[in-house]
Length: 206
Image (cartoon, rainbow, N blue to C red; front, side, top):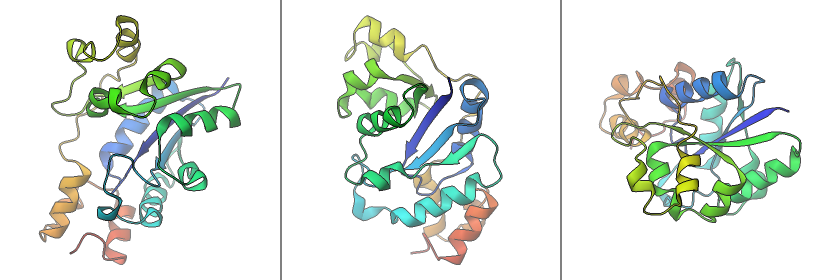
């Protein structure tokens, strides 16, 4: 049985923190090379008019994972179209790989909002959730128990990645660096090929 780790997100832009987390998850759970970085086609929690096109975000992820063992680009959310609900996407993956383990990789901030996701209870029931800490968003049992049963809470806290460096900036702050003229600072936090793609296509400069 293979392990597939689904790592979805806006990736606007993908950055070194994303790759560090994906690599750590691959080392622990996905030794067969199956961390799937999947740009959301229509992110349900974002204003679609304020993010880059899917194609630009996909191309940046392709640049980022090029030559990276255990990391793959996944375009499933474009192929099924519509809003990118994780529950639906993971069940499609399960249909495609019925004999394999499907896991969902999310950040600590998303964990605290997971109760608001589409079919959240079913998502937690059907799939293993792998959590990576985010700065200031450590998994908190007491907070989770406001929305989840004891059994669900224990499951959500069972697979928290350890020894993952907390990335100091977010995609939002990287975009702001570009827009405020701090390109060299921004490029410290993104893979070189991604930085080159951003410059070539004049992304985030206005």
